[in-house]
Length: 473
Image (cartoon, rainbow, N blue to C red):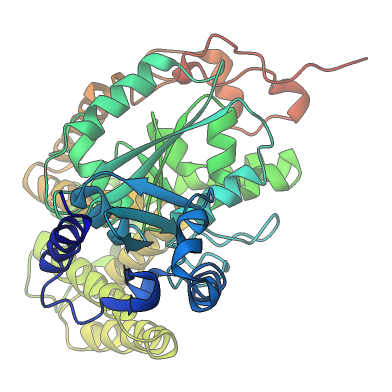
């Protein structure tokens, strides 16, 4: 068979696949009977000039065969492979009856910067970016070991998003690795754009309000999870990295706990757990006491509270829900507006609306204090996903407190504890080290013990190599 028709058919198939793609470039070099097809937006221009334009401009037809024998040119046997290669940032070179691919992938990406959502005082300040290759380099630069294994998958019928699963051999439990890979491979969807989207496809209980996978934008956090025996998932085009399995108390830990003295880290961790109690119970306690249990209020405060509620026409539960909704509106408005304007809206809006609501008799000043305390306490929780979940369940507890008083408050907390105890992450307990009880893990959950005491990895990892450090005398 003549080579020219076969070449025309193969090249024509490629061009037909990319019909009406205005960003596709097709160039012809008639002297050497060669065509190239590529997307300039995802191709390294410097490499393209060095490996394609300059050589193709000076070689003769008889020299082309020798050029394509060089290692950077990979020959493919069908047009489909060429189409996939072009989409992944390769330059497709059609020469006579053969198609070659040159990997020149280099999309535009922002530089490594500080995380805006996970700020810390001490420690490294670099954060993941949207490029998966850059994120992998941030991990590799911290873990210089051949035991760090990386597996790649392609998810999304249309997006073909690259997903990388990272774990440390001989530390991570391979049963968890295989379970996570099975869940990822079962995903059938058009596109996966972010780590938060991926977790919703692979969670044990997708209808739960609580996040069952830890997400982070910090390389140091991801590395700490890897050496602890957990598994990391990096999604291309997403700065969010997913860690599994995760536990409830893991969301209340911050890198600052380890970069500062252990006494300060312990105090901050206990403060966050106190903030959890405050943000769940403060407003609902106000509703319960002012609706059913005035006898719980000290006599000195009772008159002040009665005067502040004298002009309020609503029951306490309506009053509390109204103010909680207004706080959430201010929070959401501040997050969506530009930084400087958002801060102004949050501060001025809170002061003006709160003061005006008290003067108009729509709410009491004691409730303003309770709602503001609950809102501030929710910001102390390091994980935004967990903080948002807790703010949401707070509304349910307020309603229960408004219906049944203290019994409703206790009932709501009991339901939360029961639900948390039933959750799992990759099949492991979500409430470990409380359920099941693992006292050896408490020294790095409720407190941050000195490093000399943190000799073993978390029991949730179920690793065959639990010892992570040995203290030499």
